Image (cartoon, rainbow, N blue to C red; front, side):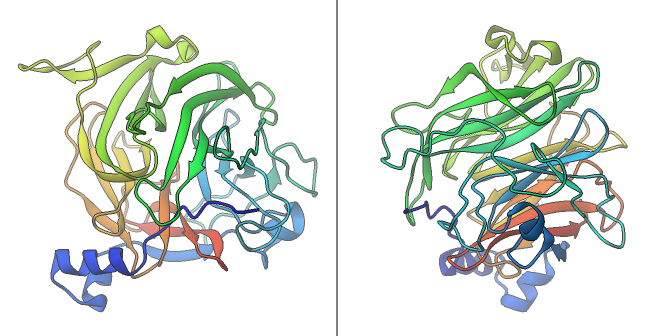
Length: 357
């Protein structure tokens, strides 16, 4: 099987970062406040021995309806490499351990598994590698509602991966799946189709609830230049597409219920937004033009975002991507916990990093 080559932050990205800041390797590394805490997946860890989650990516953490944390993984293998045995996606592991503890994140269970054993995919996946249908299903984010016990996962239906190119992949559409038992997710008929040019800005979602609304930030598929858009929908109406409203500028002011106006732009990948316990809104994403995972913050979901703060660079973690915010992160120094992935032919895993917003 030929799997995608999705993640390319090698020499070109490293050169771009050092040129931008006008510094060498050591100086550029010191600009990034985040530090490596531990590796969370790999063939040598208990994720492999317990659930055959060895080579994998993403690990998107979201708050479950029972107060613990679910971690969504994309293409997952029983061995250390992409393209190995045991291919499935998405997969979910869970943990109730504080990321800032001395142990860091420790997984205690897997979705659809009672105890130990092979952790299967949590929703249907076509696995059509022809490039003409659905190659795989990759999660974007998850959200849960304690009022109903329901979990909702946003995902991308991937049509094709591109080796060493920008965009790095093409989607068929963005979709939603739900689970009422926390294990089996049902893909709904809802689809936000990509366009023929692969430039639709509503393909990669990150979701955060605040009060009556779920706020959705989205970018194009494949880490290509383009806008970030903001929409919101009443939390009880996520499956009603007409209830989604955009945040837009009308030439005079910003307001809801308008066509979306870009809130940010750049070469953006894997956005992650979380509302921290003190009310601060935190955002991270992969900025390919800087070769780094960066963060911003705002006082409200539709507020003005701060300038970028570099968190993890390609000097620190070559071939990095992701950078998903743990929901239990805070604004305290060293308490912004990020799940960061690494992709090479021999190393395909995710690690926990701790930074400062």
